Structures are given as structure tokens and as C-alpha cells.
Image 1 (cartoon, helix red, strand yellow):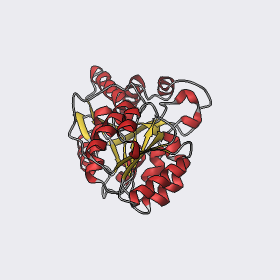
Image 2 (cartoon, helix red, strand yellow; image 1 turned 60 degrees about the vertical axis):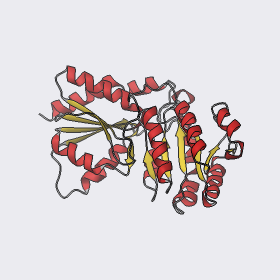
Image 3 (cartoon, one colour; image 1 turned 90 degrees about the vertical axis):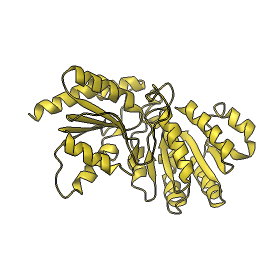
Image 4 (cartoon, rainbow, N blue to C red; image 1 turned 60 degrees about the horizontal axis):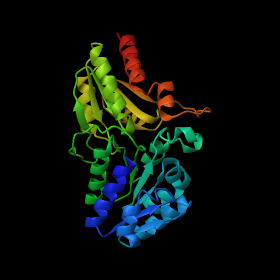
Length: 311
């Protein structure tokens, strides 16, 4: 995803003179092409993420459209106050972009895990939260954000090497989910970089005789309430899938939405995400996905268990 981000940022900068890229000492080689073409619109603020956010706020107040970019926990947790006060309070058009969502940088330890960031940012007024499922959705998200050019947004990326799901640019709209496969039995709502695992899990379920559809729920805030109404009325089970804590992420947002309904929906909700703990062991992303049941096999197994218990 990060290569697609660099490429799309360059293309946007070519057509949007207000586009400014602000980083925190990361991706220097990744953005060589951008720096060579637009040296006056690239700022490396060093290992000073809070300052980076303040610089972006100042640029936005001066009429620019800044994008901040660095590793997920450092662009969110480390500068949460600046995001809240400098960006959201003033409703500034700054795109806060993180690379390494979830366990993408798992081997570097808990300091580089990002399993709370959606929860932190979706509760901030004015903030939108977008988690693309592949590089095509990422490109669509960037295009949509700069077409609107209003208010702050959080763009949550994986790292590199993620499978490309769409064969070309999807019809991407902020706040409108993308239906990939439909079913009347189980609906898998996946956000972010777990979309390939969700699709694989759905295929495993179908082979086991369970009807399963998949939706890329790329926008966590604002929620696509129309799609939620549809799947909760049509299916037996709705499953949220995310490489993020079960607390406060997509599953939390959908739970809150259910609580505000005048009547309890037909379908049950199953939330799949990371547990409420800090791993104290080393491993790559694939290891933690398997440990926490977030690979395709684990997702399919937990859905089958839930269906069995509900009979």
C-alpha cells in the first residue's frame, strides 16, 4: 500500500498545487520522485510527530492541503493532542496518514503495534476514519478526500505486499461500503488490510455449506448505515473483521449503532479483532493473526462456532 500511496500522492500533486506532503523522518527514498518534482511541497519534520502535525495545521490555515505520513502509532498516539486541538477543533483539511496498521510492524514489538488507533480517532469530532482494503481503495480514498478538500481525515494503511483485491478502480465513496460478495446467511464486514483474509474465509465457509458474503467497510466513520440496515435485515449473522482491538474499532462502532436502533435487528453481531492485551512475545504479522484467530482459517472457524451455538 505504501508504494501506491507514494504514486498516488505524486499524481495528485501534479494536478493540485495546494497538495503538501509532511513526514516524520520516514519514507525518504519512497518519496524521492515527489521531492525531485515538488521540493517546495515536501517537508521532513524529523522524529517530531507532534510538531509535524502542528506544521500541517499551519499549512492548512494558510490555504494548503497537507498530508502527514509516518508509522501508525507515531502519527496517532504520539500526537493525539495536536490532532484533537490543532486539526479537529479547527476542522482543518489535513489527511493524517498512517503506515503499518495493526500488526504490520509486529516484529518490532509493542511500540510499533497499532491496534487502538481507530478507537482514538473516531471519537474526535469532525474526524473521518478510512481504512482501505487494497491499493485501489487507497487510491480512491485519496482522490475522494482531495475532491472534497474539507475537514480532517485519518487514512489507515497496511505496509507492503498486500494482495490487490479489485481488478481496477472501484466506485469509491467516503461513507459507502463496497459489496464484493452477497449472501442471505452471513455477512462479513471487513475493514482495512484484513480484506484478503475475509474473502478467503468466506470461500472456506461456502465450501462448508455456509452462505457468506463480503463487504469492504473501508469507512469506519461515517458508517454506511444504509448497508448496515440491509445486512442486519437480510442475514442471520453479521461479522465485523479488523486488525484492531474489538474495543472501539469497527465492531465497537457497529455495536453503538445497534444500541441506538428503535428495535433490535434480526441478525446477531460477531466482532472479530485483536484481544484486549499487549503481546509480550515476538513474531511477524502472520504469527499474530494466527494466534488471535484473524487469519482466514481462524475467521471461518469462529464464524462456524457462532452459528453452531445459535442453533
